[in-house]
Length: 159
Image 1: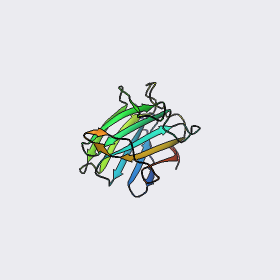
Image 2 (image 1 turned 90 degrees about the vertical axis):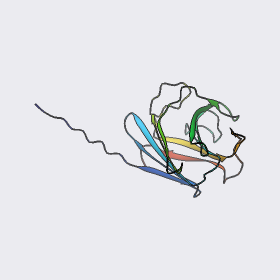
Image 3 (image 1 turned 180 degrees about the horizontal axis):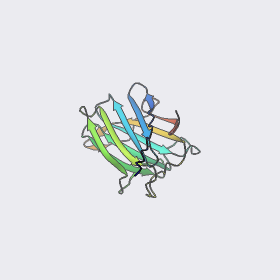
Image 4 (image 1 turned 30 degrees about the vertical axis):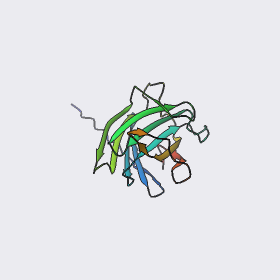
């Protein structure tokens, strides 16, 4: 009888944004695990993935919104630059807020088979990010300026 053992080496990739938050991720063949370290405490952080060939707008992007006050997350899809629509087939798994919301972890399948998600099949993607307020329990439009939103080209599988 032979026992086959497979060791999968996971590398941790990291992105720091304006001393406001740090996003790390590890990948396997089927999943990507994200960890968000943040020091904002109020409002929300929005993160999104889109094709590297696309422009720097929110259009055609897969967006996740993290409510830092209520420790909630929602999955969205944006077809244009208006408020992104809810993706009712939430593809984020094992979402966990810890250390009073300072650390947020979640996992997502690389291939979700959800037409509103970006399938992660390439190495490079544009990562969209924004910071905004929650007004009367609702997410408001993110603030403008380089301190509140941006786009970074990331390499999912190679640092």
